[in-house]
Image (tube, rainbow, N blue to C red):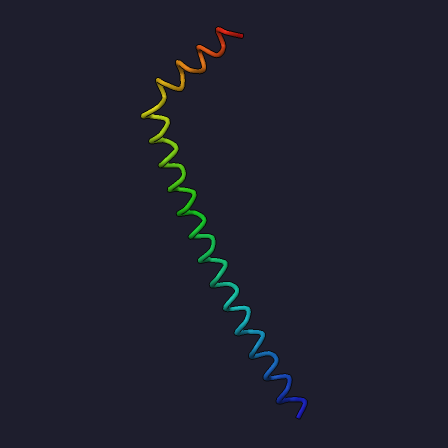
Length: 64
């Protein structure tokens, strides 16, 4: 009886470890994709609005 419980416990534990490992890998990939998307949007925004932002900051600096 104890042998059956031990084998069942070890099988369940192995299944849980495999599931956790897969999910962590997926989460890491998803976070990487989100980070890449944010970086692309930020670079695009800075490229398009860089001149305007620079002039606004220069204006603020001159008023100080």
